[in-house]
Length: 478
Ligand code: ADP
Ligand code: MG
Image (tube, rainbow, N blue to C red; front, side, top):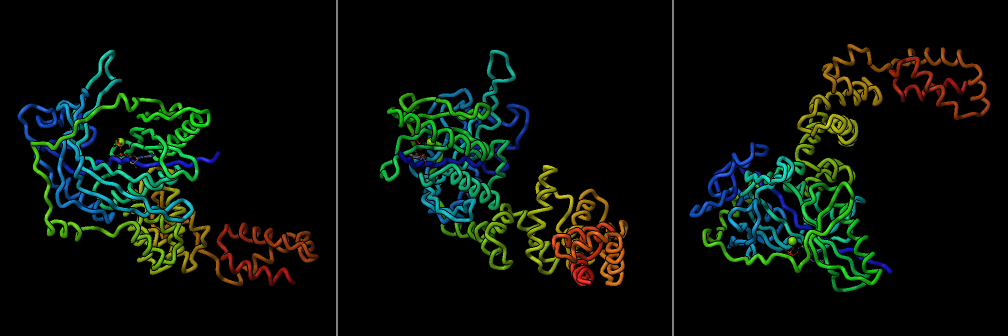
């Protein structure tokens, strides 16, 4: 029996405002517990929330960037439940009238094809505090620094059909929020996480199956694994005649499995109602237009431009626009190099990305800046060094030995392009390999590579490869 998977994600992006969504307390990460929680965050009676305008502006940016409907009037609601890290007894969120509604986003999949994923809504809400179980024996600590941190919850339509699509969608949103500078997207710190809703149904069926919701996934790898585990689990249940129950589940990354947290019967009734402490948010046209004017070039636009202007493949353009900083770096290289877009792309996605990866750095921390890389590539283009020697030069630049020219001089790496010099090396190599020469001349064409290797070895890799090839062909032919 063939099954089809259905997935919808609820992504929580922490907005990178300086202060909290309803108070003036700092949102900085990593402070001592409870040093960044003011009376509003602590839920003291009589304290009134004041909406942070920056949080609203960032939500509007997201709405505009995704072509969604930005609600001219939205309402904050209380979501009521009891938990030690929620001193007020309710979370302020948006329910019936969220600030962003009904959009669509284009997602590029691994194979370069694209799909559209519907956005149901994106609403503003405050984060809760954190319970600390590890530090206290037999007790639980509560840290309220995170209480009141602004979140944008982005809810997708159930449009994804496998785990890879879900991950690609999540990466698209991740890239977008960082382009827009509305979230730092730091997944280790919990600034970007999701709940994955998963169900299966028989192929061809029109109705959805019963879903489970896997909470709080904070890495792309966990999203993929948790969904795949869940799909298998649900199929097993259905194929053995059972029924999937609607429930919330947790993903255990150590055991690589999901476990039940609570079923729908035990689920909270949140008794949402409009928060009487906060007025509806009413946005004027001029305000929205002003924000629209601040939108940067979006990832999809940049990708299209890189394909159109630089002739890059869809894949390379996707890699180079994964972050604004990487795209800027690449454009810098091309500009200084005065073209050679493909060469620059190969180096940025190849050698440079590899070096960054090994060092665990991101592009803004690169030991080799765009100008330095462009100047080095200029020496490949003008034939001072070969592409192969360029890798050594790059490595030396990475470890701080100087500019490309300094390294080429100091190490004597200048390419040998003098025809007579190369010819004399070829003569020596041929004289030293009479057996190979005879074999080659009697038809063993494969030995050509051997001679190239010998010439390169004799010149420490410095002979111009194209010239070596051409001159060798002539000389070997006799
Ligand atoms: P809730 O607020 O109770 O979690 P929603 O209706 O807001 O419920 O849905 C939350 C998410 O679940 C959305 O992303 C939606 O696309 C997804 N979803 C809804 N039904 C299904 C289903 N049958 N299978 C998979 N995902 C679903
Ligand atoms: Mg949900």
